Each structure stands twice: as structure tokens, then as C-alpha cells.
Length: 422
View 1 (cartoon, rainbow, N blue to C red):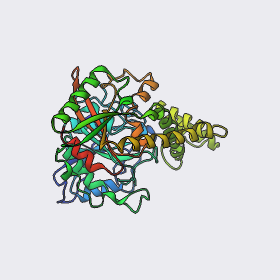
View 2 (tube, rainbow, N blue to C red):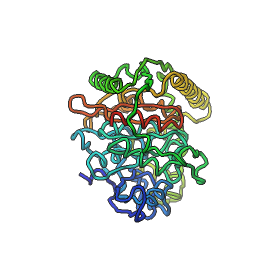
View 3 (cartoon, one colour):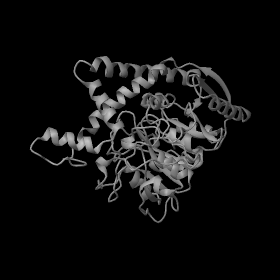
View 4 (cartoon, one colour):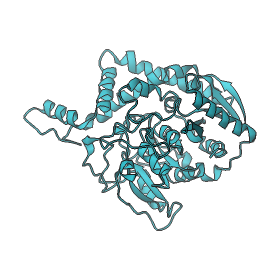
């Protein structure tokens, strides 16, 4: 199983003792590991070996964890199925023959298959929560700024966060304890996680918890997914929680706004991969433009090329205000809607994904279908809020996740609520 879960299987030993001593961790292959190649699932970086550790990797080592390999992923984090990886697809251990979700599919699959106790992924628009839901494990997308992005190969800087996977909420929270907190090498980090104890919050006590359920995030979802979601809400009610419906009208435009912003940032971030500064070489033939074009033509896969082209177009002269500025306006509206809904509820709940895991190969020819599958996860990244996906049950033998969203830096509240289910 592990050969399709990991791009590189290599043990990196941590300190002799610490809170994660004896624990094994899979690390997504877009997080830098000193001396161990970091490919981002791309031919472009097939041979790239970072000279330094990401902050989260340094913290893992200090905590005594043993890293067991670099997990497979959609190329540069662009995808929802882990099928865009240059190194081949990853099967779903919880539903063989189906995708594990993306883009952190290898990380979720490592935990689901027992190849690692814990894992790290990154979440730009749902890339931790989607595979957590599809593989039947727990995944946390922290508040923007809670975890350092130093050493994460950038895709969408204003959206992405590194987040933990575990079999239980408490396991994932214990990993968050280790990686959270301020970092002088990342000016966007916040000190909210410096003294937090997230694992201790996993008490399962939801007595009196007010849950808001955004009606828009249930519309159009698969019938079996919706039934499983309501069963999980019933379980929370039995334990003392109550729910009411809320409305997030802006989420109708969240997917469009997200993809304009994410692709624009990708176009800017991936400009460095020209075969000279980084990545696969096009071989200089006297014309630099052609050399760069050849390197990118050979080094990038179709989905990455699609997003770079769309992002470059959205940022180009004459279109910036029409697309990028409008997307930023929509982002502000999404934030406002979430703030309003959370002023009347402790957490918001929805299915993590509106559909169960696709069969391998089923969705590759329809990028739009994949983009729309992110409808419940991308609004959270636009709003810079924390969210967690926990197993809610199954439909037709396929895992279904329940997503809880909380206020900024409200991770302890989310962990407490989610631990009532996992």
C-alpha cells in the first residue's frame, strides 16, 4: 500500500523524548525537509532537495516524532483527488478503487492505512478537510496565521495553512499543539497558539453548544451524504447540543472568488519555476523565453498549466479590476456572512464534501465538477477561519465527513465539539 501513499519513503528521526516521542508522522511533499527531496508531486521538482527544514518539520523533530516519508499529493496542491500527481494516483484505503481526496490525499491515506500515526497536509481551499472526509479520518484546517508557513512551497499565500491529520480528534489536536504558534520567519503568524493546549480541549463536552447549519451548504449535496450528516447532528443533540438554520448568501459566489484569487496567486508564485532558479531545466538554446517555456511545458502537468494560465489572465492589464478585484470584494462579503452567522452560534456545521469519494479516474475529464466539489470548504479559507472534518458515518459503504467551522482562533471550541463524534 505504502508505495502509492508516499513519493519518498525515508525515516527522519526526531529527538529522543517529547510530546510526540514514539509517534510516526507522514509529511505532505510540499513541506521542506532538509536533505530529503520535496517534489510537490511535480516533474518540475522531481530532483529538488531543500537545504533547510520547514518550521513545522523542525517542531516535529523537537517533539520527538519520527517522520516516515513524504506523502503523495496533487501537483503543487492543485486538485481534489491526488490524481494530478506526476508520481501517480493514491488509492483510498478506506474505500479501495476510490480517490482519497486532495490535494493532501497521501497524508490522509497514510493515517487511514496505518502507515503513520499522524500526518501533515496543507489546506488552500479544503485540501486537508477533503481527504480527511474521503478517508474517514480527522483533519484540522487552522485559522490563517496559527501555523507557520515557512518552508511550505507556496501555491496561494493568502489562503493556505498547514494542518494535522489523526485517527481521532485528540490525536490531531496533539499534533496541532506541536506545530501552532508564532514564528519570526513568517510575519503572518500569530501568537494565539503559543500557550494553547488543544489536546486537553478534546473533552467531548457539547452540553449547551449552539450549532448553526448554513442551508446553502446542504443544497445540492448527495442525498446519502445529507442523511449521514443529519444522523451526526442527532448524535450531537443527544449529547446536549442544539441547532438552528443560518444563511450564508455569499457562498453562492465563493467558489468563483476562490479560484480567481488562488489561481492569480499561483500564477505569481509559480513564476520562479523556470528551470534556471528552480526545477526541471529546458536546456538553454540561445533564447531564454523558449528555454523557460520548454522547462514549464515539460515540467508542469495539465492542471497546473490550466491554473497558471487562468491566473495570469485574471491579473493581466484590463482584467485585474474585472476579475481579481471583484473576487476580493466577494471575499470580504464571505467573511462578513460568517462573522454574522457565528455571532448567533458557537460553531457552524455542514457536510465536509457534498459528495462521497469519486471512483478513481471518474472525474479527471471534468475540471469544473472538481472545482464545484469544493463548495463547502473554500468559503472557510476565504474567511480565514478554522475548521475541522470528522468522520460522520458512511453512505453506500463510502466515508462521509462532517465539517465544523469556528470563529478565528477558536480551535479549542472546535476540538471540544468535534471530539464528541471522534
